[in-house]
Length: 206
Image (cartoon, rainbow, N blue to C red; front, side, top):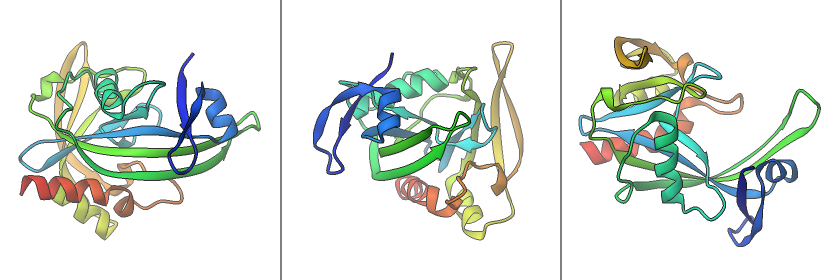
């Protein structure tokens, strides 16, 4: 069973409970959103298996007793198979996330998370990725400037390198991607959702 530390809305530690209880009661907890970039100004979105959409490079809950930095390193390893040094990761923002969702069984999933958003330099090659087949279909490499412009305009397409795995070998495909392929919730828009991360990568790599 997975346990999470929980807090009041001001970040004061209150204790820990099972993950299901955290979401049943709507308790504040920490998550981490991990973004990788390289020095040519590109960033990496993962392709989610559940939706087929492009999302953060890796993300997940910060477990009981775990630091945010440890969670960053673990999620990158679990989801896309990279061992990276996260000691020089850069904090972009801590975003308060609040959402209630009615599940198919009629119960309410209550999410109250402080999302710790980090960027970190990726110095490997595209063959370094090893995807968790239960969660991830691959990664998408796009220029941060081009993605930001796409999201700002709300239409059009940009160049992307799609990295997927087949028979334990990574395959690259270059194609155009549209804004509709990026993960956005009903109450969000892509520009507001991703602009801080993309602007930070642009600032670092200019």
